[in-house]
Image 1 (cartoon, rainbow, N blue to C red):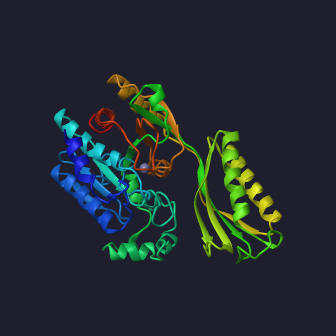
Image 2 (cartoon, rainbow, N blue to C red):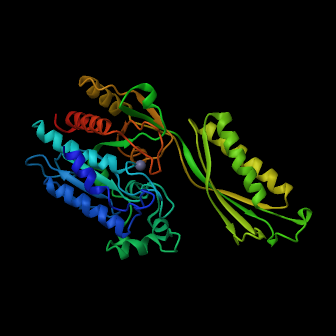
Length: 412
Ligand SMILES: [Zn+2]
């Protein structure tokens, strides 16, 4: 089966031998290896590969005699895809499952004797996780004009390397990044297959779901500034320890999320100077919050910040809090969603509707083109971890579902 061979060939790239987790960050040697893998998989299938101005990869299957996507008189393209980058120590499935399934679905369409009557594209979006430059879905945001190109070029990684510098070092011209309206205008539908994140399908007894909406979500940066001091000699009463209101914020995030049926997480923190025997001068923490609607999200963040402020004031600590990125709710195109549901139902593939708390390129693109998602069952729900998993039978069901949907959208 083509899926297994493709999967095996991608698996070793960027994998850490000891943890089994992945470190595939944009514009690194691991990223270059993923790009070479994509180009090879496309070439093996006679697909035409293009790298757009923002570094996103596209593999095109042109209908016989077609002038290609975006050409005058040509019909709008159907695009599927996902991303190949990972979070630090991420799992194998988040992103790659959508790309490998896309190539396998093309194979399945050919086996079924289907020919596209409109261009069929496979896209791999750059820096979806925001793991290197801090902005999630950077490649699709640039494509859709959802981030200023100048601001994007100046984004820096932990070592101070800018996006512009990293792109140039990888042989890609950073001056050309920005919206590609002609390319987007040529896309009539985008369907992203993705591993389920969180556990719902296991309880529903279904291998596949159709995406309903993406929860509104955002990242807030909290800077607690206190006074550095000696851990052994500074009396408790004299201390202005920023670690204490930070701890209150962590607990408040958990409590607010629980009371509102939402999610709130502090998963990244830095302490300065970071000495075992010193009261910290400064603690920086990042709050990730998500909720079923905007009002709930605002309520959760409001409660966390109020608790952090109160605790900071009680300990003589300054708190500066600001949003780094906030993404509103995305409800996927209803017409496209219903079309997916009916073509799956036509093949007796059960596919309940599922909302998600995770952001995706499909959510960014939904502002510009009809977009939809398919989820593949993740039995434990664990994601952004080496334990992320989907059973081979469910991966096969995903390929079949994607091929069914693409046949309906691109071959009729
Ligand atoms: Zn993903």
